[in-house]
Image (cartoon, rainbow, N blue to C red; front, side, top):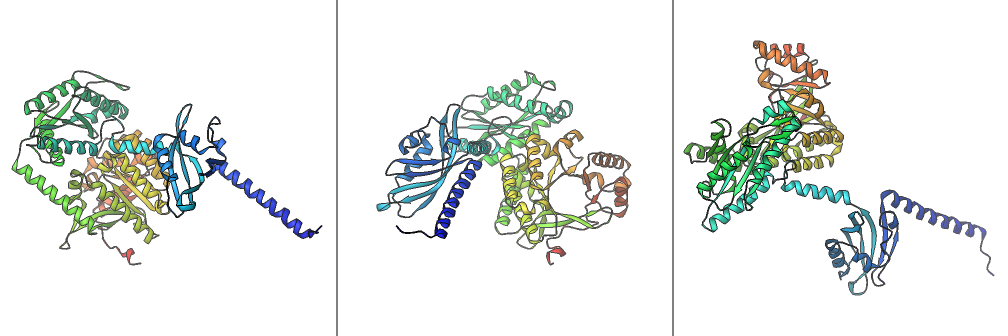
Length: 565
């Protein structure tokens, strides 16, 4: 008998205990993370699990690979069978989403692991972890739905409707027939919001959308194109039929009251129409022309209707917008869309508190254009999302390069109406959370109100990430201070139209003083825009304004002094 040294016995026991502790720690970690570890011997058709009973139904036979595959929904099973059939020589990692049927419905899981090949590259073993991912899948499905549909009404959103309109025009052209596009605008929705509340306004939007949809043929398509607007595609119709359908749609809205939580509302809508492809060759042109007709219809009062008619002046304006949009895309591609930084100074000290990052286009000849020269055209042509994303990326890069500055960036009204884009904004900011506490996101008052609940969630998430939120152009829209409290913003920027030449305008003084007083009662910081002289600044400081912004305190600069430090 060989005598084992006492020290060796102790070492062996310690190693055994350590191995047991490692296994226990692994088991506890997987339980806490809600994952199951698996080791799948493909040749033997057996799977060894650890933690599976914590996340899977007990009635499932998990020991057999074939039975496990049979429990999966088709899409996930097909991907897994493709992996099992692989003959790749190298070991590879995999991530596969699957669905397993439960008594209460299918539940989503994600398999993450490694494929280990055997002889000839055939799959010998799969090992990894499985975690529940139902919430993630539902969120992906929700975002996928929102990518095509309007969340409030369930109809197509603007981008999806435009894609459908493109197909309709192409088919009508190819088959030598006609179609039409109508845009319907709910009349005086702002009065409903003011008189009955924003919830009632949303109910009116939903009610109008339902009435329009019920009055269409099965082949026609409806979508929501803006806060109070719907677009309708009439496939295969004559010019006379277009007028008849427009009348029927307006009656459907006008003749039936809409019951809201705030009371009964009798709504009307004005309509603009364009006959296609005679009136426009592309979906972009069709939408613009229908909007032009809508402007004429609204000029006649409520419940109006007008058809687009070519106008040399309008055509010239449209071509100019298209040229500006093309130049904007080219400037973006060539790195000539840049940020200029305007100081916002503390009223008490006149020291810079932060800077607003303002978009500028540097033309090929070196001329610098303010955002007002190209952003409206970008919004009309549907490319403003690209510009807003570019501005955010540049601002975050600047914050990382210059750790002492604080920047404010703007979200355009069009972007604020798109929940998918807002989520993309949040995702990008979350990836750079280290600078979020030095970022102020500015939403215009009217944009914040367009989709009140979506923007409320957007603002809440921004603040959770550490950013601050400002309402820009405050006083220009219809925000009540009740809504301002619900939005939970950090500051308001008083519309410069009320600040300019303030010392010489007693009426504006009363208005600004009231705004500042109410903002202070809500604990909000105030910024006065367009402050152009000492007299206005002194008056604003007396009213209690916290910050000034205007050329008197500094013009926007592409390369401010702090860039050199």
